[in-house]
Length: 136
Length: 136
Length: 136
Image (cartoon, rainbow over all chains, first blue to last red; front, side):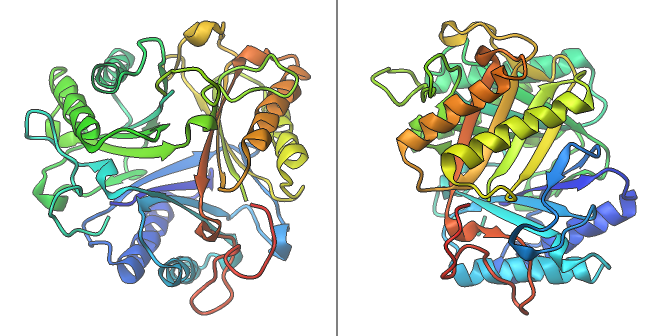
């Protein structure tokens, strides 16, 4: 399962926030074989001054429309898959009228056994540690 | 030291939020030898729509009572310990009247030397990098 | 690029929040060769009770002025560099009148290829995966 944290400056309407989440999730589904229903996202709005970004680092012009995305996911994706994800997120955000330059993305990789989505056994279970074949 | 991030939908009273934190910390103490006083937690409430979850992924019925827990901790725990933690958190939350299906947990593992809790030396210190034997 | 998450209890004025961010960024620049303009920070304020800390773990007296800092950065720094960073952050916060004991720091290391800052190519790019020599 990925856990997707999205950080924005305050002020975008709920409908646009939802569409941003949709865009990012669709990119995960399309480029990383994440199941359609494997969607868990946390969106946080920040006061001006509490989301700090450089408006020119690496020569990329960023604006207050910046979308900072940090995705925790299971290790094992290839560089090609990561590049495809990065590009797809930017494309999907651009389709909403956002600027590609405002897509800022970081991946945190963890072991497959580090996820748990529910526990019915007495001592629980790691959802992806067993024989299951699910991409997280 | 673990750093525990807990994400909820807005609206639970402070007393219940505290008990949720208690329940998760107790599970860490009981299953992973985390010291009782090694408690550092960040709880965030989200507007409806800003905490997105699938209500049926993997056939698990989730509700707005979902508790998303992301724990950063030192690497080195066994799968058995992780499973015990996952189950214990779900058990402890269930003891508060929450649903086991609403326990959603992810672990992020880091090197032991990646923590610092105070600095008295001129150039600081990594709290767990030395000869100390403390579980983080 | 590092991504720096800073968590505080509610109530510090924006000017001090900005200076805390400055202090942490300066430490990264000074001890880890992070470029001056490579600054991306998310600051979150928490209600009392939603930022839980132990006031004495490891014998360190912490107060409500605690500054919890979680930095995601590329792997590869030496222990000496990490120690230097930890100490410098504490020093820089102390220069603002904060207590060294209230500096609480954690590092999450990721692969260099796990960052993307903008996408002009059709399928995007991983900003640090290519031949570039940039410290993230």
